[in-house]
Amino acid sequence: MTNWYAVAVGFVVMTVIGVIGLAIPGLGQLTAGLVGGFVAGYMAAGGVGRGAWHGLLAGSLGGIVVAILLGVAVSALGAVGLGPLGPLLGGSIFFVGVVLALVMGLESAVAGAVGAWVAEE
Image (cartoon, rainbow, N blue to C red; front, side, top):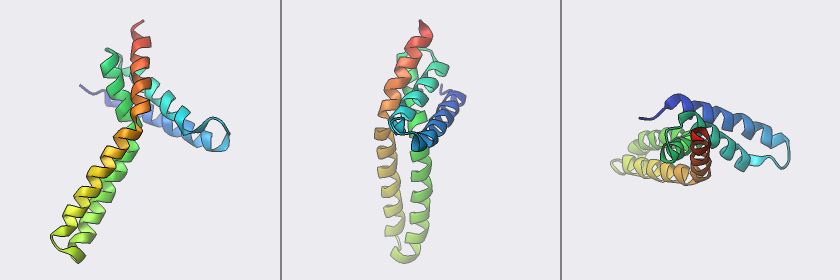
């Protein structure tokens, strides 16, 4: 079962470090993804796979939300101008957005697996 509290905390940590990373050279977004994924995996514990899952969700959460909003908006607006092709276009945008968000969250999944492994030690 997914521990949404661990995912939310990891996402918040990632967001805060990402904002700080914009001001401090060298900190960057990769550090934010690694630390946020580690925190989510550490909090979820329960094994390396569970930690990786929670890290992946924490790293992908923002992108998934944006994909949902963009897919719904394109479907609604496209239905007016494109007829039945509008929702198809919106669904395609949603699918591509979710896949990209999951791929971009892979470093957080690795960090989440390490976090869960550390939690078990």
